[in-house]
Image (tube, rainbow, N blue to C red):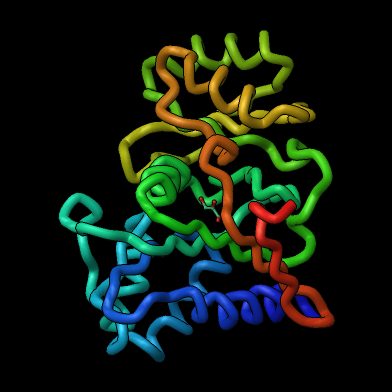
Amino acid sequence: MTQDEQKKRVAREAIKYVVDRAYVGVGSGSTANYFIDELANIRNRIRGAVASSLRTEERLKSHAIPIAELASVDELPVYIDGADETTERGALIKGGGGALTREKIVAAVARKFVCIVDVSKVVGVLGNFPLPVEVIPMARSHVAQELVKLGGRPRLRPDCTTDNGNVILDVEGMRIVDPTDLETRINNIVGVVTNGLFARRAADVILVGTDQGVRTIDTHRL
Ligand code: 5RP
């Protein structure tokens, strides 16, 4: 089975977490795109979707799924999104697609965060995937110097402006044994908008697509 087929499997499984007559938060990336395609089949059951990026908004619209602004939504029972890496405890690296800030905001508001990944994304220790950090453009060299002090090797992502008008530094060489602590430290650097560690608000459920089927991890049961 290919990685894409595993992604489609978890996208299909994630539909079970969508709450009828409510809004659903929708992430960004190829796995989230497969989820949007599945969501289209049940669009009459939901009030609408909150998008975590402009690209996701476009895909939702292409399926005639109603879009809601996060600020005007009273309740968001669930947020469904992919990840670049996840531990079994639900700490994540996200932002490979550059949408980390809006993704983190929607995840913060949602009652339940369901992360959908193929099995290649599950790791023991985060950091093999370069950690994305969204930065206010004028602060990029200051932030890069501070990230070097934390042990990383930051690189400016070429030709990338985020939906919020900022740049991204991808940080290599981090072996992240304490993701909550590192998330806080990086967010405290002046000029950082947010970083791609989702540990303070980790995933509640991880759906892992494997050749054998979908493995469900309830991170609160560990
Ligand atoms: C986008 C993300 C994505 O969830 C992450 O990059 C995974 O993408 P894919 O589902 O294409 O593997 O964080 O900012």
